[in-house]
Amino acid sequence: MASPGFQSLVLAQRSAACGQRRADGLVGQDEMFRKLLVANRGEIALRVIESCRELGIRTVAVYSEVDRGSLPVQHADEAICIGPADARRSYLSPVAILSAATVTGADAVHPGYGFLAESAEFVEACEETGITFVGPPAEVMAKAGDKLLARREAEAVGVPVLPASGPLRTREEAERAAEELGYPLMIKAAGGGGGRGIRIIPDGERLRREFDLAKQEADAAFADPRLYLERHLVPARHIEVQILGDAFGNIVQWGERDCSVQRRHQKLVEEAPAPNLDEELRERIHEAAIRFARRVNYRGVGTVEFLLDVEGHFYFIELNARIQVEHPVSEALTGRNLVTEQIRIAAGERLGYSQADLAFSGHAIECRLNAEDPGEGFAPSIGRLAIRSLPGGHGVRLDTHIYHGMEVTPWYDPLLAKLITWGRTRDEARARMAGALARFEVEGIKTTRNLCQEIIASLPFARGEYTTDFLATIGTG
Image (cartoon, rainbow, N blue to C red):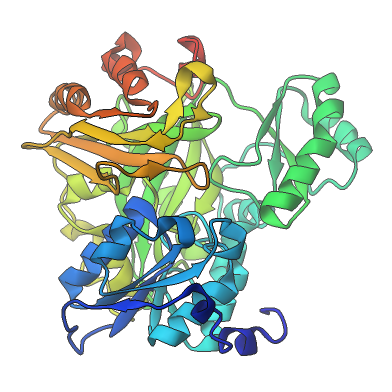
């Protein structure tokens, strides 16, 4: 249940303290939701605003004080300040978000990714307040958010999982579990996700050194100190399946994505379909994702994630119960808008199509362009951004919230843009990506552009023969 007194706090209209809100724009239609609040920032907030415009839904952008001049604020029908730069007092505050929804009369909230997108407590609060959360119901979100519970659900329907311990409270318990499992291992936060809260443990000395720190970090990041150990599979590929489910039991998959190019367990380059994947194995991975989704009665847009070893064995690792950063590559293959599908499902509509109705075409690649310096261990890069050139053209898509003169701050995720290319073949998509990256030219900050160029041009990537330790093999990550 949401914390006591939550609704009264929401109705206190906390957002009024941030100043006046702006209202302008087109009049929405009396279809689906009347007004939707976008509980996020950056490129995903813009993406949701654009999809709502297609559906005839009015939008409310929320912003912290440092995001006052952002593009989502400029393009939404309304905008309202929800607090200071500190995300804990703005984008991560359920009270701030639902106060803004109440003040503006929004009947739905889209969380984007990150921030409150996978908070079961926030979903409960939305349900209690009578505001529709664009995503799974609280019960499903709780199952997805608890990685140990999700593992048990996968095992219950015969989806393979890696050997792992149960929840660990002390370092001594972890040492006993490690002896049974054998090294190398990973420490994982039971309430974690998105690659955060993971530590590689090659031996007992590292385990003794890292366990207490990992527990403190898990408690701080996820308000859940529980840890567990899981067998570290290396080399391996990271394969995820895009799923959609409606309230009527209809579930489909939009194919798989290969997300193996990672730094610090966070993705940098993604592509679909996964290269060099046997068709029979591909079908088994898809079927396992659907089986798991049915087990948890999944509703909304989500991703079932797997590790694939060199012998062709795959293992469930987690369910991400939200839209993914890399969702555009799946859109490129299907020709459909995943965000509008997400909103339609939340509004109670049926999917309206079966698996047999979906057609996939060509190949797509996405590069994440972050405000980071790869030469300095991916340290955040801040400053005033100047745009020299941006890519475009046939088969090229740029999802971004940047503008000339924008101040890049240290407060939030460093993602500046997502560059997506599509081609009839993988080689064509890769060639287009090389050209598009060359045209992404910004000054004033360091970015991952040059590293992405190196990756796309590398022989292992050209052959589709890379694993999750790929960046480490070229001296980065």
